Length: 157
Image (cartoon, rainbow, N blue to C red; front, side, top):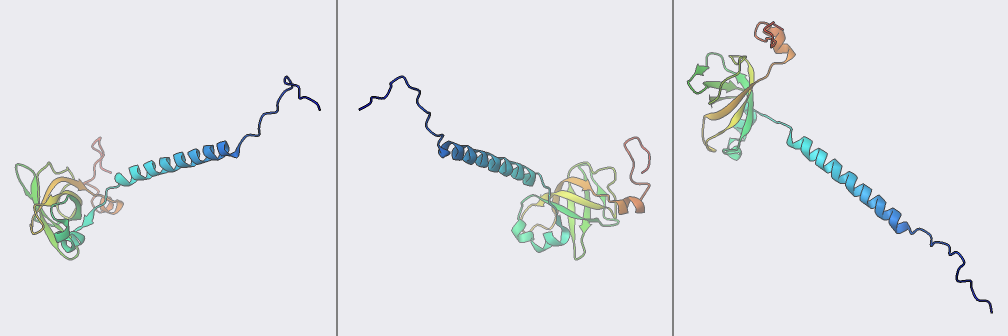
């Protein structure tokens, strides 16, 4: 009978697959969390707007929730007030009177596409109360109205 030498080197046990699997699972979870955080951040920063026709069709369900109302400023409807402006925004099937309590942008005028941030006072209110007007000007608008769009230095684009 031979006795094992107590001072002989002992081979280390083989590395368990558990530690590799654990590392892989942690990396997958971290990657998933990063993707989730990025997608939620991007989705929360998107600014959607509703057209006049969409708002008219869903006014009861909108209630007094804030929306971004998109439409065309009706000609001869702008009335400047001490607090902002009253005007009418039109769509293809209807129009909505707007009372805006802020400073309208410089390009604001009749026949201009706008987005008005605001809400109705209630589900049955007729007048849309706006807090901000965003003027939309596309390349077609700029081509049709070259004298209205000015660069910050004052030159006409």
